[in-house]
Image: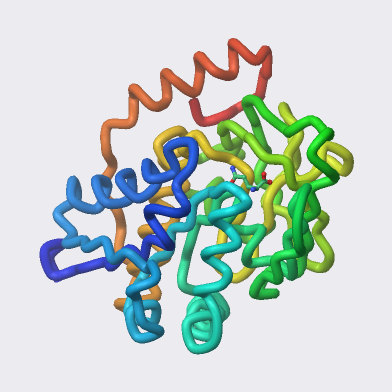
Length: 269
Ligand code: GLN
C-alpha cells in the first residue's frame, strides 16, 4: 500500500473547552507529521455535538488541559454512551495523549480547590485533588524520564536512546496514582504531586501527562509513536515512518536541557 492509502482520524476532545497552554499544538503536530509523509488525516472534534459513534470512529485521541470550570462542563456532557465509547476506545488500545485536565477526568475523580468533586470516568486508576485555593500551583518547566516499561522500550528502539520528555506544567491538582503505571520519573519540575517523583500515567496506549508544552512538538518521537501505533492498530501491519527533519526541535531540546542544567547521558537531543 502507498502512503496515500492510509488515513488516520484524530479525535480532539472538546477543542474549545480543553486546550490550555497551546495543547492544540499536539493535534497540529500529529496532523502535520502525517501529511508530510503523505498519509491522509482528518481531525474530528469530539465536543458536545459529537455522538458515541463519532468517538468510536477515531484512530487516535487528543485531550488537552482545562480550567476547573470547563472540566465540570465537559464531565456533565461526557456521560452514558459517550463515556462508554471513550472507555472502549482506550481499553481497546487506541493511542492517545491526554494533558493535565484531561487525565484528571480519566481518573476516578478530580476535587477542585473550591466546589464539588467532579466524578471522572475511572479509566485510569488514579485520583486528583486540588489542596485548596491558597496552595501554590505547580508551574514551570518539566523534564521527565519515561519509565513506563513498554513505552520506554518502544521509544528507545525508535530513537536509539533513553527517552526524556520536555514540557511545561501548570496545575493546582495533585494526582496520586493507584494501580496505574507512571509515565515517568521527574528529572526537573514537580509532576503528579511534587512528592513521589512520578509524572503522568500510561495505560494501554494512553499517555497521560501534566506536560503542556505543547508536548508533541517538543518531543516529536512521541508523536511518531502515536502515529505508528494508530496505523498498526488500524491496518494490522507495521508501517514504517519516513524520517522527518527534526533538527530545529532537537536544537530546542538541547537548549532547554542546557538552560535547566539537566545533563543527560546519551539523550536524543
Ligand atoms: N484544573 C486542573 C488543575 O488546576 C487542570 C489545569 C490544566 O489543565 N492546566 O489542576
